[in-house]
Amino acid sequence: MHKNTKAHLLFDYMKTHGDEQYEEEVTQLEHALQAAYLAKKAGKSPELITAALFHDIGHILADDPEEANNPTLKNDLHEDIAADYFRGLFPAAVLDPIRLHVEAKRYLCTVKAGYYEKLSVASQKSYHLQGGKMTDKEIAVFEGHEHYKDAVLLRAWDDLAKDLTKEVPAIETYEEEVVAALIK
Ligand SMILES: [Fe+2]
Image (cartoon, rainbow, N blue to C red; front, side, top):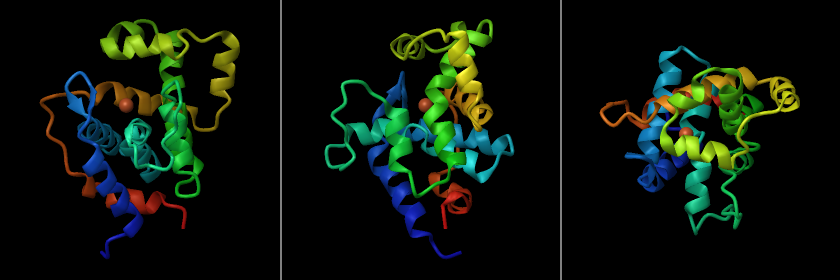
């Protein structure tokens, strides 16, 4: 297959900028690759695998001084940065799970007993910064999003994608899925 330029530009960006620590010990790139691998293993759509792969690109963009989209935001709204960055490139089936993956943590901590306790320390800490427990109204709004179930799945992979010992395939493995998810 001929290399897809857009997909490879994104892969190169992740490879050259993804060596920052995610949290604890894994790098951003390792975290992204583990999340994508879990999505692929679960047999999910190209859009959701792509969302898993790029769900935290907002962290990388926010730290990149050369990136025009670099926002001088006081808060790290990385889920919005990523979704804005990808607008026009990927459809809502990619953008929405990314945009909602932080809300999905709040959702799961609120509706699922024991979920909070299983989060990493860093994730517990950011949970409180991100708004903590959801109100009934917030739950209803969240469940009103078309792709909220995908956001919940993405969140579960996100929480698992911190395994120091895990060997996962390289980013190029996902060319087929990313190309399939691109808006033509
Ligand atoms: Fe993540």
